[in-house]
Image (cartoon, rainbow, N blue to C red; front, side, top):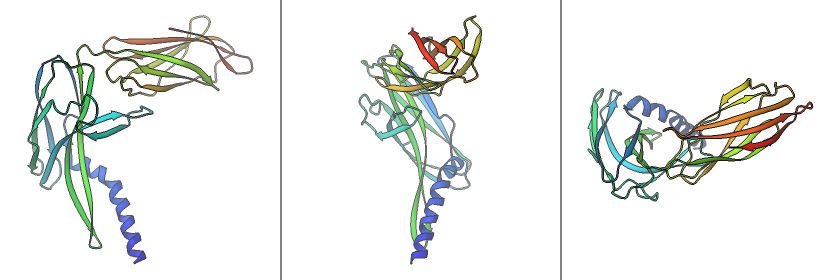
Length: 270
């Protein structure tokens, strides 16, 4: 009995590990992200295409869920039932078919319509999931494997407010830390870069920060690893956050590296 239980547990973990690969091998969505800049009262009519790349016929269910980016805002998402998140777009979107059978090596088109409300403000986010359920029988006990893929929807008003600030600049050893605060009403996924100049204006270091996915009203931590190869002296480090659409947030930090190798912040300015 104990051996059978261990075998069942082992099989469960193996199936859990391979399930994502099975999903990728069986269902393929030709468009994984839809970004829409919309006007009040606009009607959007578009479609998605899904491929069955397996050798088996599949029954697929289509459904909508809301999603939110979660702290530390590194791209991790929390999926929630449709209509759960304030301002959910779930009531604006219709899609057909909601269930279908797809033959091996065939495609299925899914048409969707978005009726944008006349009072839309900011950003609204969700995911259209395509789910196929399967099972595997082990020692006469069925373990259900559910495979699904989804298309993310970013529906944002054309007059969406993209505002942000970089603050709380501090030193933690040889790391420069700070916070990126989204003070607008749409999700911000900034491309953040930096460059450092010495007293003569020569660029001595440059790089790109880890990507952030910051919801409206949230703040995420950022970090720049300062080069330990820099000589003692004074430096200017410029942080740039490109918010897309021409909006850029800039923060300039004046630093000193002492003869003992310690970094000091002398001045922080926009």
